[in-house]
Length: 99
Image (cartoon, rainbow, N blue to C red; front, side, top):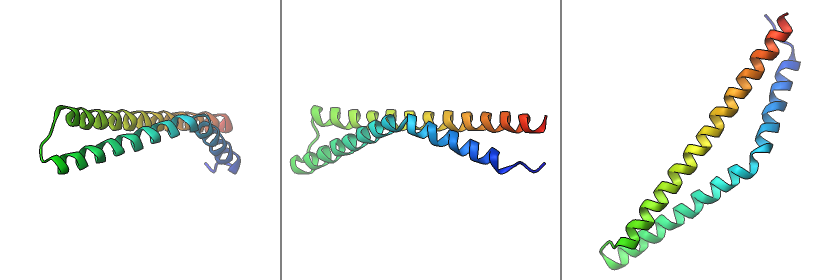
């Protein structure tokens, strides 16, 4: 059941095209994560300076953690879908070669 190298090349080409299509989306999620991390660090600095926590700090902490969670969920969803697509492509290409 040896598969020709063409199957692997076509699969990798499909993955590369998929990654290029969603490059902007991944950069956007990375930016959201960086902003969230900055919000968390600012909240931490204010907490250490003041010695007490206030409602705006809680808002920044919960907002930042929620933004990080949403970004991580979308990236995970994207990777899951891309791997599913690649798996489907491999299955279809291998069935086409076996016939």
